[in-house]
Image (cartoon, rainbow, N blue to C red; front, side):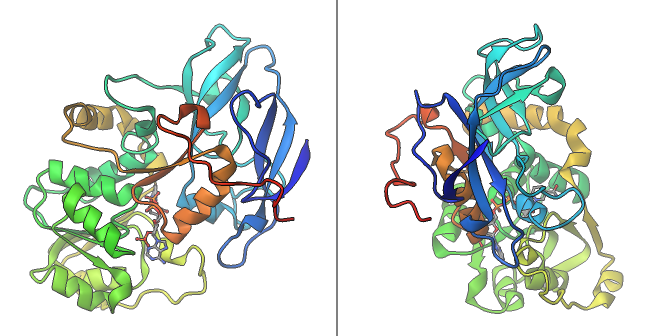
Length: 369
Ligand SMILES: NC(=O)c1ccc[n+]([C@@H]2O[C@H](COP(=O)([O-])OP(=O)(O)OC[C@H]3O[C@@H](n4cnc5c(N)ncnc54)[C@H](OP(=O)(O)O)[C@@H]3O)[C@@H](O)[C@H]2O)c1
């Protein structure tokens, strides 16, 4: 393998008919604070050949996720430097040396951040195909993102009809799925927080939130107090920090805090932990519970049963920001950390673009060195 010479956000043009070589993203250094394109590189290699019992997959859709930022640090189970990264991906089998994988078959696997990979049947999941459900939904509403929202509401919060919710990072993948699922499950007032007025407008107009505040606009406790003056029963927390502290104050008796993620601290690990009144936990009989979606894979079928009919009827829509071109995968990841996505961020191979392909100039003659 040889580095392309371009740092992470930039790389030589790649498109249909130019895929005789494979491209793989490596992390090259550990970030302190916010990562940049300089922490990644694109590595070019010959197309791998499948050994007996395996198949070559051409990847079509890639998920980039906040947990990848956590894996960039020197932590157990984190990304190794100068090695292929992991990530949820959908691809097509293009050469097979096992009867269990057929050429042309669409598969889900975790060898992301690369254009091609060799997989064994044990390393993939065959995706059920549902009428009128796009492939991207298997990374958003029906994927780990939707499953996180579904588990959070049904198993951790044990949401009851009519209960009022507050959701932080409400405009992201988990946040939009949580809002839409909560509506379908009969939630009462739905309050969210997000990073811009445009996101707040999308959430109230399209997703079903009743009130959304921009968390940049003042102290979280004041903003939440105005948006939910009667209090809340459930807080789905994607962010942590001051919003978590504000929610403890706003929760009613027997309220639940569903700890999903702590994105406010992934790039600022030295930020002070949130300060709240611990007595509230006792006096209001609150319950705070975190979870990892990887421990709830057995609920995948239940998610399909719940969500697919609504996707087919149009009552449920996936919220997605789709970035065209594998060469933008690092930009897409960094943009998601900065809040440039609405809904689940997904990178799509140019061959899958339905409309005109967006041609953001990547790394041409002006490639930064
Ligand atoms: N427990 C699990 O198994 C599990 C599974 C999946 C995801 N998660 C967690 O769930 C959360 C959301 O994940 P996702 O995949 O749906 O990502 P996402 O919400 O689609 O994208 C991340 C969003 O976080 C917001 N953000 C970034 N920095 C922030 C800050 N300092 N304060 C507040 N918001 C900030 C940005 O939106 P704004 O414009 O609104 O700032 C950005 O769009 C993350 O914490 C993730 O780690 C946990």
